[in-house]
Image 1 (cartoon, rainbow, N blue to C red):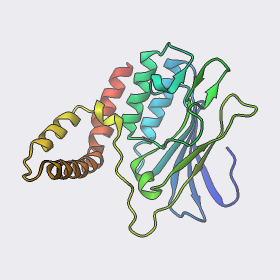
Image 2 (image 1 turned 90 degrees about the horizontal axis):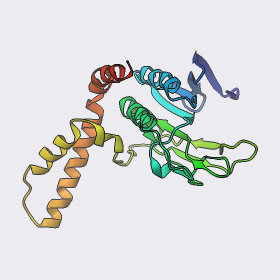
Image 3 (image 1 turned 135 degrees about the horizontal axis):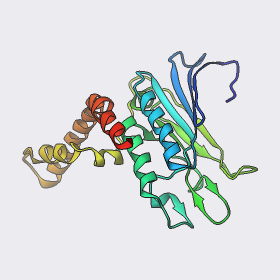
Image 4 (image 1 turned 180 degrees about the vertical axis):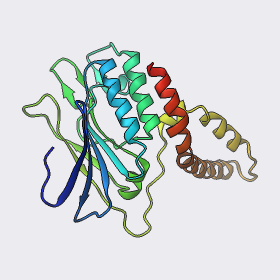
Length: 235
């Protein structure tokens, strides 16, 4: 890790697969937790990373995670290779859901790594809800690879101004939560009367508010209930 004099960096944990640092700067007085990732290629070994991230997710600070995760989230993130170990897929997606991490997306080529025959999206930037509130317009640009077989990523943070709010984004990880489908079904059944198109719009607007509140208030379940499930699955 390298940084300029504009930043104050406190390395809190130096693990073989990740580095946790607390960062502050002259431009942003709020402290931010950064997890720089270089994941193992071995599935059992990589679980140490997921467990470390789960522990870090208990922070009350804004948290951003970035680097080489050595795993994809699904088949759409790779070409040239049909094999995809379901254990690796489940481990990674469980970690994202349990840690309440959102993928920042990217601008650039579809894949961040290639050996000339196979291409995958192994590198990414993730952040927790607190980071999304602090920087509601996170942008990630992926450049063409040069010497390395991985493409470099550039993260740009835009701090909120005035009362600007982050736009609503549906999170795929919600689909795996045991309460999600029941919540949507019960909310959708609540009656609204009027023109069919108007009813549809009002129901969607109401559901959006419910999901935003639910995503914040389910923190206790994620950090306590799901943490126990996560630990149980690994034994």
